[in-house]
Image 1: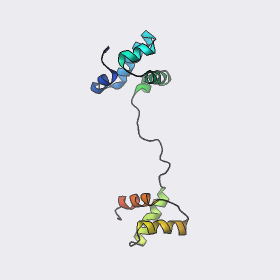
Image 2: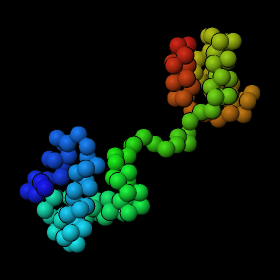
Image 3: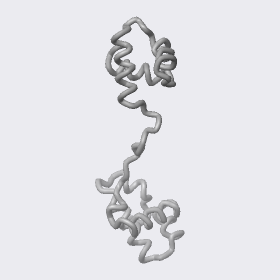
Image 4: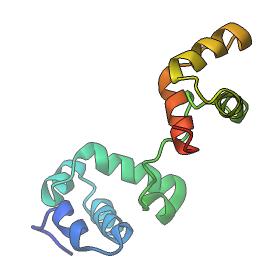
Length: 127
């Protein structure tokens, strides 16, 4: 066991944080006092409860690190609109971002900010 050493000190040097979390939980199961375990390992009670719930739900798999990447991107521009912006820029190479935005609003009834238009044109190297 690594009593006296904080969880974060231990995890920093560990190659497998799942095993460290499992050891903390095993100590919790023996001790049955979440406040004491949180003081010993210097981990919040909320975190311990979260690990415990994940362990009961998914076993050791629940203790693994989870991705911090967003699960969805609701404001992402669709491929159809991206292709439309690219085709407008290739058809009218002298149009700027603001004029492309205006053209999308008037002719296609697409309301979009200038920032995604700029990002799209920059990724395909039309700017």
